[in-house]
Image 1 (cartoon, rainbow, N blue to C red):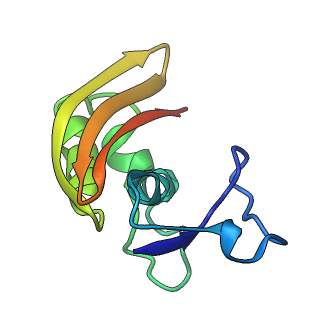
Image 2: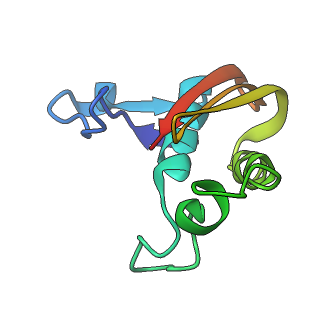
Length: 116
């Protein structure tokens, strides 16, 4: 699997030819996971059914019993993910933080994600 590298701000990297790409590495899957976790349902014009239903099934009142299942499913459905080794989520003052260690086709990677 090959992707274009993005920086810490999520901007694609250009100008260094093949050095702007990464292939067959845990960071590839980590970058895919980051993109997939940030995508809200209905946000992508090409497939409005894709994404996480943040507004309806994750954030808000009375979602504690389902949001972990929704996020775990999204992680497991990501290309290159074999399984989740460790998963934790914390809801503090309306902010959800997710930390996970994921086994990928290329090795382990970690997820540290927060959504408000």
